Image 1 (cartoon, rainbow, N blue to C red):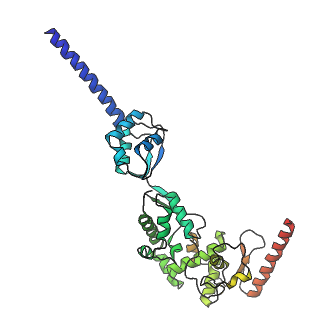
Image 2: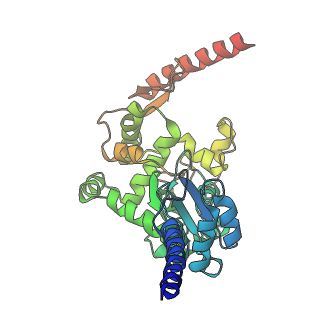
Image 3: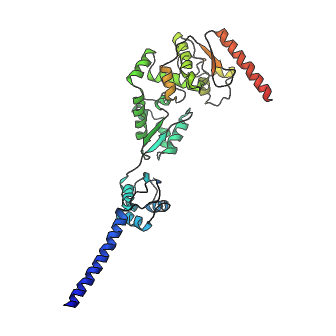
Length: 341
């Protein structure tokens, strides 16, 4: 009888030990944090589970636990592309499920800097997203695709608003443009649309004027003032005579606009053709758009760079005053160049 009791006790001890081991493993895989630091993980379509394990080896505390979780959740066959954030508090099983169920962490897609070509915009997007350069670039020339977002190739620069947008890294060109459209519509409130109408402009035309202003100055205190100059010219039927539009005609390759350049035959050449060009010549920021919608009210029709070389301008009502300002600037420029030599 005692032998049976001892045997039962021994079996109970073995079973208990086995259960304790399994409980410890379960706890290790399902409840215990298994990472030493926050880790940002990008999974591409061609990335394998082994690649991920190798990448996570930098921060994983118990590799065996992570391997067990990967096996249990079939990560090798169910791995989904995406941008994932592994936190120090993450458990092995959570990370495995995150990767097979696509629990992504959004990324910031930022459009910034001087955006004067579709190539540059496509590069900025593709450098930050999984979406390829070719997919984005071809979309910007696809009339049917752009029509879904109420824009076209001529007005596309105005469709993009430089800013940061949170979205999933795996977003398609459709997803990305849908987000841009959402932000564009949010910017164009009823109040802004009303202001555009009061100026006799469409939203697209506001973007066009704003793009010219952005080509003229980086001095924010002058945005509304220069916008007022161009709107004054436009209102009286005077040619805009904007150097940035000539630069656009030459693909922004000019170091300096010369008289010969003003003869280029393009509808974007505002020295040759009156009215606004067919569309924006770059992507203007929101501050430029608001400057056009809220222009300074003045009688200026002319402006030229200030002789102080601080990025600001001197403004004039009459052409004679403008010529005096221009001569002053040229004299200062000549003196500075002579001093440098």
